[in-house]
Structure formats: C-alpha cells, structure tokens
Length: 301
Image (cartoon, rainbow, N blue to C red):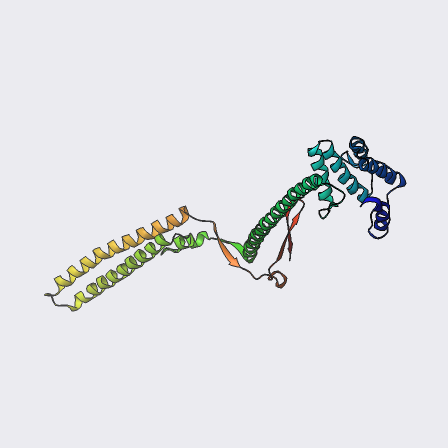
C-alpha cells in the first residue's frame, strides 16, 4: 500500500465504515514504516510492536492494524524471529483472508513465509469448515431423532388422552349367585366355567332322576304284579342317583359361593376410549433448532 496509506484510510472511512485513524496513529505508523524502509529493522520491530505487538492493538483503525502486522512480520524475519513473523502473518490473514503482499515491495523470503502461513491458515479454515459441516450433519441427525422421539411421545400422550380407566365395583350379592356367576364377576373365568357346567349337569341329573323315580312310583298301582319288582328296582336306583346328583349339585354350589366370597374382588378396571376435542386431533408442530445450549425444541399445538 506504501505511500497511499493516508488516501486509502480516507476512502475506507468514507465508504467502508472503517474507524477513522487519528493523526497520532498515522504518524506512529509512518515513523515505524520509515524505519522499516531504512532497513533499521530492530527499530521497526520496536515501533510496530508498540502498535500491534500486544494481545490488543493500541491502534483502532483496521487498515493500520493490517498494514502494521504486515510490516512487523517482515521485520521479524529480518531480525531472525520467524515464529513471531508467522504469528503476525497468521493474525493478518485471519482478519483478512484475501490479503496479498506486494511482490515488488517484499523480497522472496518474506513472500515464501507469508505463502506458507496462508496455506496453513487455509487448511485450518477448511478443516474448521469440515468440522462445521460435520457438526451441522450431527445436529441434523440429532434433530431428526429428537423430532421422531417427540412425535412418538406426542402419539403416546394422545393415546393416553384418548383412553380413560373406569373402576367398576363388584357386588357381594352377585358373588352369591351359583353357576359360576361370582367367579365370572371376579374374572376367574376358568373356574367359573367349570362350576357353570358341573352345576348345570348335576342339576339336570337331579331333576331327571327325580322325574324317573316319580314316574316309576306312580306306575306301580297300574302295573301287574309281574312288572312291579322291575319298577321298584328302577325307583330305588333313580332315588340313589337323585341323592348323589343333588349332593354333587349342592356341594358345587356351596363351594362356588364360598370361593366367590373368599376371593372376592371389590372392583375391576376397564380402559375405554373417549373422543378428543376437535382442536386436539391435529398433530403438534415439532420444531428443532440449534441454540447456545444445544438442541432447542419448540412444540406448537
């Protein structure tokens, strides 16, 4: 940039929004650059370090900062301080990646170091870009997974909202009803079916044997003496079977009633479906974004 520094500063301040350099800053820069041009490199290093050598430059103008780093880096090379020169060139290129050295103003040795630093900064920038792309891809995948998890969670919540659990009380009176009704009420279905079948069979058997016994007894006066012994045998057999059938029926009946009361279940629960309100039937809008603390979730209903 050479002798055109004041003009460039004026144009940049007018059109580029760059902070205006004070007269003292320009004077200090010109003094340091004149020392560099006079090949008094130790003096140039001292003066440029006073401008940009610390962690925070003492000058505020961006163009002067870049120019000072350029000359300070070149001066470092002439006093055999290459690491410090590379550091200044690196800071310059991080602030302005497109910056170019004037090949007529700087020797090949300076150009070579500047070029090597540019390659390293470029590699760092490309690596950072790859890392950013990988981070973006991880975020995208995590966001999709989180979205899927939230949608699944919302679906489960909708199922829970649609279902209601109802407690239905059981009755002690129903538990006293025979034929396995009490067991069915207690949800003991297998034993209930067994009692229903056995009690029905024994009751039918009791009624059938009683009917045959009564028929045989009523037939005796109308039957000849030859057939009366046969009818008496039938009557005695049916009476015995009737006693047995009735005993079995009564036994199963008592056992069923006692079991229904001993294992009585006060209530049972049923899950019933209910209609959702119209405004809740549409699914939620799940939005994910990358915030300062990681993935941020926003659910709009």
